[in-house]
Image (cartoon, rainbow, N blue to C red; front, side):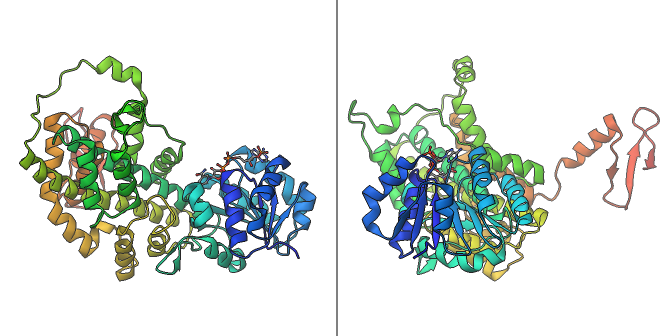
Length: 476
Ligand code: NDP
């Protein structure tokens, strides 16, 4: 029998996705540039299902039923183009190349357009959940044509994570929409991780709590509205002791965060789209600051405040306030992420169901959280919601949190503890709320030095003041 799907690129992700398809009853053709990987997969896991091992590109393509579905799981970037150059000439009209790698959505748009000329569907697909997710059920974000999703969609839904029986996979939109949304997912993940790190830092240094106590606090939070995979693993990390030194594990890890680039892509794209995502940007910059050992060494002896560590009772109260700050800041960064998805959809003409995005992130992926149900509900209530902050329920909660949130941001300043995520989220919240912003002054300055003109609050039109002459106003 011919294979219903083929996977090329059998490193950790490709191998586990191939096994996931096979375990779900599909016949899976497998291929890898270096055939040893293909043989290893068959030797180790061949008994798990129906695999068709192949060595050459021709053999691989011939083993697939039509329309062919080729899932490419190779290193993102140039290798993806190489694989397309190798396989596309062997394919026929209506066949699909599915790219499950972490491609930049602009590359996906370019590849999709080129392959569409040849009648081939190119389906850029975000896959989240790492190697465990790939095997047991990832969150899957396919882009590409509606037509491709008709037969491919049910297969992807079958291997995806399930929450309350619903698959964590939906057609996001055409061409690069899937990779775009995956990128924003990763941006939100950066922001979430940064906020949790700030909560930890404040509890440790301002409230004087031990990693063990902080873990207990996080576990308690994880039974409530902050229930999420990231808080859960953070608590596990904080209770772990380093075997070699007996110290808390978190104290023996070098404090320089690395990144593979999807957070940076998110911020670069947000700047291009003109959509404010300070929560994600601060998270990317916080990692960058941590890695600048040169700058940190140069500044180490700069003075800071004396900030006394809180007594036990105040520490408990402070921990509750941090929970509010974390929750409010989280709402803000998700609001920014969703704005970015809306902006991308508008720019590229994607018809994205914003509530469905929340649904498919409830399982399989790194930011899975109970909270996403609430986002789904907000878009169910109003599909045209301009911001999550405008949802009545979120607005109420953030209103209840704001006083504690301000206390925490002030405490961070008083203790000299950096909390760029909490602070930027609060600044964004206050900026959106403000009756008047000092942007008025910015416009006046621009007009002063560059005659860039300004609009008035009381009349239509553009105006310029002759600053260097008699300061009379002219209509521009
Ligand atoms: P890698 O990113 O390490 O890529 C290794 C695979 O790519 C191998 O099969 C390798 O073949 C193949 N490859 C590299 N260059 C070429 C080329 N020029 N032509 C053909 N094949 C090539 O593997 P991962 O499994 O970690 O990731 C696969 C994709 O999934 C990547 O795009 C990654 O970004 C993405 N991804 C990864 C996640 C993860 O948690 N790791 C999560 C979600 C997505 P060979 O054996 O011959 O060297």
